[in-house]
Amino acid sequence: MRLLVLVLLFGLFGCTNGGQTVVLQPATPPAVTSSQTVATSSSQTVATSSSQTVSRVVLTPAKPIETPVSSASVNAAGCAIPPSSTQFLKPPPIPKGITGRVGLFVGRFARGTKDFKLEQVTYLNPQGQFPLASNFKTSVLFEVMRGIDAGTIKPEERFNVTRANQSYGRYPYDNSKLLDLGMAMIAWSDNTATDILFRRVGLDGLQPTAQRLNLCNTRLLLPTKTWWTAQAGLGGADFPKYGLVAATKRFATAPYETQLALAERLDEKAQSIGAETLRRYLDQGYFAGRNGGVETMSQIDRNLQNASTPHEWARFLWNAFVSTDLSTNAQKRFRDIMYHGKGRSYIRVPFKYYGGKSGNTARVLTYSGFLETLSGDKVIYVYMNDSSQNLITRDETGLAFQLINAALKKVIRPADLVRPKPVKPSAAKKEN
Image 1 (cartoon, rainbow, N blue to C red):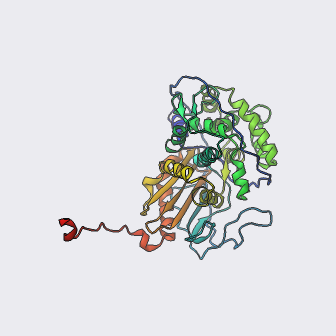
Image 2: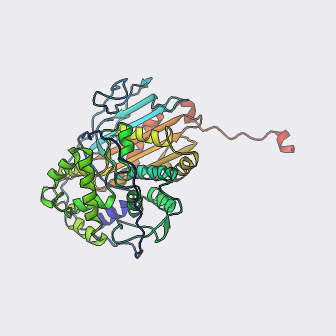
Image 3: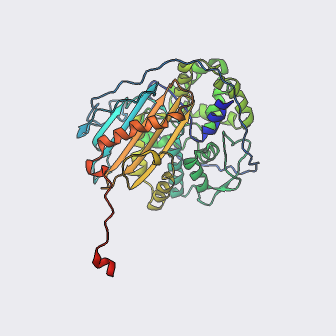
């Protein structure tokens, strides 16, 4: 029972995905659409329980890639690739206790420009595709703010929790304001709040930004309840219970328009299923290990759920925090909410500003964030881990930040690593 209780409650923090790189077909970004759903519901927390049988396979961490890839910003296929930097730094060693695949991208950027231009960078497996887990929720908030700027979304909108939109774990009160849902999504990683906002901007509302940035290995199409429906074996003909690996592979490799159509049909199916029914099927199937071992779970995750690469997600964060098209007011709202994302208390370098997000679920742990140093430098970190031997990866947060902080200390200027001592007022100032 302890296992699924933790997994479901940690749905506050997570989602999953997996291993091999899948290139999405470039497509013309569709216009942002919106259709608000407002209804009534109860607001009791869903009870969870589980019994779990999990095969344990020892997996080894990814090997460091220690050479800058290219000085170009895109490759021949038009996909963004890691740029060269003034100084590439050898990545820190992966801490013992972290298993599975590891991806890392930590960079300090050139001052005075909004271009994705790195001064110093260190990374591991920067172009490997991983599940974003709840890190994808940053993109939901960003598109909500863009919708407010465009006038298609109003900050005063209110929403209720329904049988259709209720996902895992805690969920917000009925009649919650739009920005309160945004705070719940980032600060507490509330899945229901996330799904309400995701559907508000539209299932086609996140991917256009990734396409505009040439992020070919970033997929942002499914609300949380939607992919869980497929993994529970309730996805219908498109995602059959006993052919899920093959079905999710077809989904991951299809052109964008086909992916969107599949996502919309799966989301319609998900909204017809109650959260308690979904929990029960996952408890008795996916989380009981009946979908296969570690690698099978990882294949399903990487093919089905929202995903990116360490390098591409760093580019997305740069676009959201720095090279942004948000208005001044929308950017302030975005940064104020992102300040409350999990990760700030684990950072061991001084900073003036932090904005970040966590994500975890079965065998997956992700962290990402944006920092401004004491001198005003801008720094981004992205950590991704999947196929972990440990089912409950949230317990590895300390190990993850051991690696993140070691990388941050490599790229940040030495002067910024020392917090200045407070200046004592002079005698003359005391007299005044």
